[in-house]
Image (cartoon, rainbow, N blue to C red):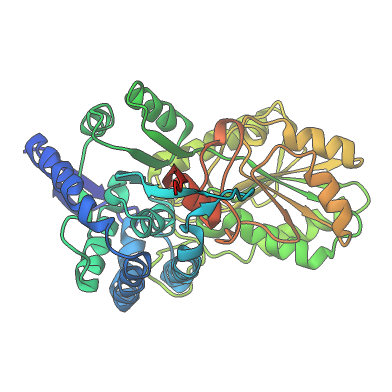
Length: 461
């Protein structure tokens, strides 16, 4: 019997092992989802939404178990308390806007004798392929609005966070959700690709690597299912001379190193105006030195291990290449356990970097950041756009209109001013270029999880 083993980054032990679903079980699950969807779509929107709030309540009630469970699975320190703040905010907002977001849209030009409107029908069976880095937050982005919209959901969670899928299933069961409306499956890659190519899935949302996104598109080719793909990122920040320096430093350090840098919208490169460059770098280094690498089960730890040793080794390779090409490393911390093959990796700050280095152009997804001096807006914008990715970009200035003008020229899905590494559920979450396609959350998120159906009704007297 094939199984999936979850190797804990804390000590390398096998923390969880689960059997992979048989092909027969997968087919049965999809058939159950299809059958359940017809009745689920008949449930009023408000009632469907109420199940989401009950699920949320059940999930939060498990927090004492979930927080250390996350540390064992992917290494996030327990002091940060899981992901419940964001899960609450996103779920509650999507519930709040559900009825108006899913309401039929009347034609903008009324005509006597006609009723014309566009109804938003559920897509059918939605598959969510969720990642390990924010395993609850990323999954809830699609699970909640898809269910509220009237689709049924099949969740395939990352092998590194197998228990998250089980937690969602328990929470929905506690909420009394009708059977088979939500199902959690343990699948291997081949089964996932086969299922996507079967034509039995109506929409898939995938969060992960660019290579993974290409594999999803290839597997789904010819099925005409809709796709939501949030892939890689190399999110930049630009710090202008009028920025509040202490605020920028504190927030950008956290944006770069929280969750060991394993954030979709984490800061991976910083461009600083030459007028404040030296002061910024000095402050950034001092702030970074406050991070404590260690066992994520200990309250004193502010940076746990990366989810897998190979991810940490990739960062080590990026750093080594940058140093060979002339970069300067400022932390020079040789933490206990920091060696090739170990997931424990301290934060690193690099200067004297350029775009000939991998660390400034290729996604790192780890605790390393490069800081470059720039002469002004034109250079900063060119560098921010010199990337195959485009998820978020942050601009640090006291001038809002200036930030908007710069943001208009940056190739990105979200423009931040004086903040970073945050997802507002009232604003659409999307990306450009190799970061993928589709959109999550907000009104637009509902639009992407429904199918428009036009009604053109003529009254004949």
